[in-house]
View 1 (tube, helix red, strand yellow):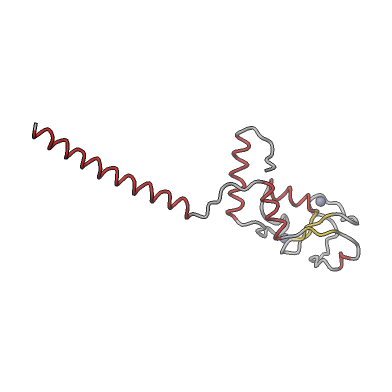
View 2: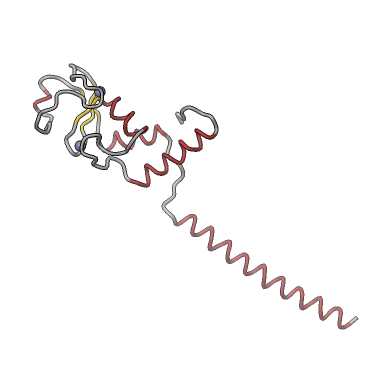
Length: 149
Ligand SMILES: [Zn+2]
Ligand SMILES: [Zn+2]
């Protein structure tokens, strides 16, 4: 009987060590997950807000077109849909001073590339793009067309 209880104690001791080891591993893993810059997938709405913050929408008018620092040759047309800017249309001008219709550019940025269609200047940072893509992938696999949260 004494041998049996000794064995039992030894076993308990080993199990406790194993559990403590597992616990520390789990804590390390949780800390790693929390400390990484991962903030969850970015919805299309958030993604567009992000673009808007950096490149605010402007309203086109013949007068204001002089204020737009359009790169030579002074594009007065959207190179995405190849139509001329009309009075009162919503435009978006990027840091590279390339200007497009807001809707044309937003579609381009969210569906194709997160770069300027003309000069490939990065418009949105890589982690924002990858987090947005991740959500779109999930949405696609769920058979959803768009997420407007
Ligand atoms: Zn356009
Ligand atoms: Zn550009």
